[in-house]
Length: 89
Image (cartoon, rainbow, N blue to C red):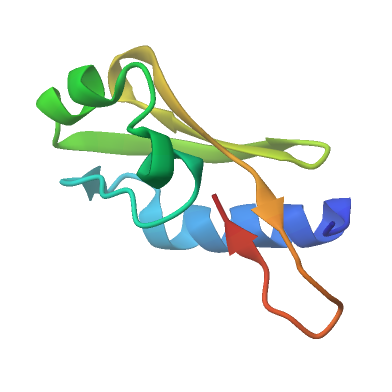
């Protein structure tokens, strides 16, 4: 599990690259939503695209994107071992 500072650095990187830019598509590439189907509001969210990323925030080890129209994308960040790169799901 990554430390709080690593999550904060990741959020800073995402803010630098995505803040005030539009999300034009959402693709589920792996994980439980690939295996069991998309999350509950997936179709509603994708129908509203493009949507602007207002900000990427953290609360402890929790990371989330604030989008326009009061939408959010929550993310968990996992590390498999100390030498592995962290993955966002």
